[in-house]
Length: 91
Image (cartoon, rainbow, N blue to C red; front, side, top):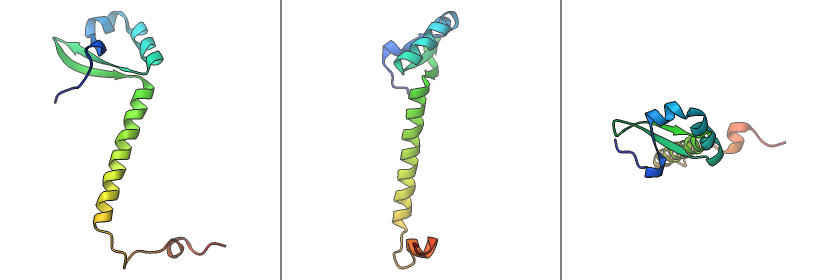
């Protein structure tokens, strides 16, 4: 698997170990991410909570879009129920 990242986002394990508090403070302020490297290879990605939440929302949107597309492919209008048939008539 290949990671896409900007080299300014690289963080060595040593720096993370020595400067954990400042690294985490930076993430909280700038809403970004760091790619943690060890032996010149990516070993982890550290995300701010906002970045993580945005990523999870995009993932959920993609999943729901794929699910909708799949359901539309097998949709049969003849067997579909109306809103009223499912939930009853509005009062």
